[in-house]
Amino acid sequence: MTATSVNPKSPARMRIRVNRLVLYTVLVVVTGLFLGPFGWLVLTGLKAPAELAAAPVHWLPTHFQWHNFADAYQLIDFLGYARNSLIIATIYATLVTLSSAWVGFGFARLTAPGKKTLFGILIGSMMLPQMITLLPTYLIFAKLGMVDTYWPWVLWGLSSAPYLVFLFRQFFAGLPRELEEAAIVDGCGYAGMFWRIFLPQSWPVLSASFVIAFTWTWGDYIAPQLLLSTDRSTLAVAVMTTYVSSAGTPITNVQAAASVMYVVPILLVFLVAQRGFVAGLSTSGLK
Image (cartoon, rainbow, N blue to C red):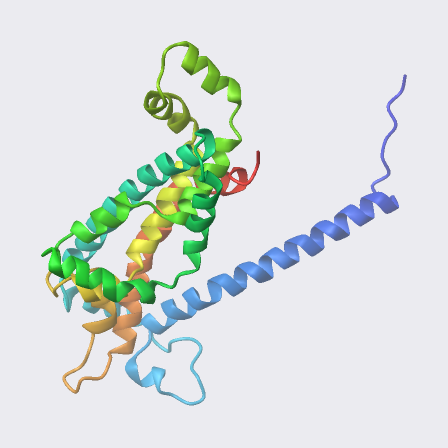
């Protein structure tokens, strides 16, 4: 029996190559659209103040002003604000990931009257804008004496997040029922089943949930501005409010340089956890 060779110039081969070329072209264009704003931010951080106000627009700096990054680091307590952001984001991301996993496990594997109704209400709460709940939340924390502390983010983390609950619920619902039955036969309760069997199986969703929650908190501006003092504030607030001249106008090029350094930790977190992040988002909708 002889193997038949495929003609590289056959119509089927040509269609595959054309489709692949179109796909790669679309991906390159979409990638450029996403990277364009970040590239413009980097170029702005490398320009002199006069070039920012020039007309027509100077697309590239005449001389790269690398000292803008050093100025952005030195003009404020950059590491102090970054440490505050890291503490808050890590606390919230860790707690909300675990609490959302626990709630998602309950919705996926336990039976109780009104479970579907409660899940519908939970998903519906995703449509509530943050601004609606921000003022009541601030009043509650102020009454409890938690303003200018990290306790609000601890309580937010323990309360879980609807979108992350949905991710975990979809993932846990797709695991075989035999795992649950075998654990019950071996005398394992639902708490032990969650910690010993289901949670270790969910590392893709854990990774995706942590990255999403970390990004939310790292990039949050309103809550830290409202709940924290200047010393305890986050890097997002510092970058937006502290780079001003003696006349009270923003130092745009230095602010852009600081924004580039502000984005780098998020990129590092995503690069480290990207495999689990993509796997988690791609498997959480399958049963």
